[in-house]
Amino acid sequence: MEDAVSKLLSDFEGGKLTRRQLVSGLTLTAAAAATVAPAEAAAQSASPITRKTAVPGLAAPNAPAKPAYAHMVSTARRKTIHVAGQLPRDADGKNVGVGDGKAQMRQVCENLKAALAAEGATFADVVSITAYITSWERFREAAEVRAAYFGANLPAATAVQVVALAFPEALFEINAIAMVDA
Image (cartoon, rainbow, N blue to C red; front, side):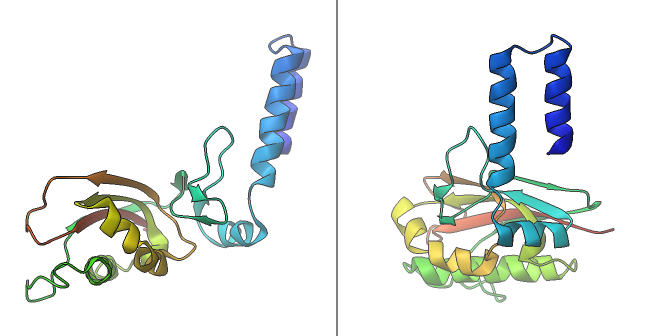
């Protein structure tokens, strides 16, 4: 934060910023510093992955007290793992929880967990996901299941409603990108 403030002051003194731009910049810098909760700050300092749910100028992701995703995730890690979209199918290829959003989300997350583990990664290493869903209602019903797997390690996330998935009884398909130390 000190570097950002110093740069703003330097730019102002050098005539590159107006007083209004300086005040706006200082306000945004202070807001960004103040939006990191103590628990989040502790988690960020212990991890090479930084997750930001509060970003000045962007609306909070869902309820501020219980965000569902991070607006941005950054990392200095060097090994990237791309996990293909996982469907609610068990190890034998059988569909799980037909018509049951929570059961399907649990299976999708278990499949993601297994794929990540194959490369030595966990949900804490996931930086981005894309969820393809056939029903917003079912997706909302299953939100607590998804939240239980990710916990405080919120990835950058996108959810897209589609007409159908590769298997008609599937309600969700989620792919992931994770990063670990090389």
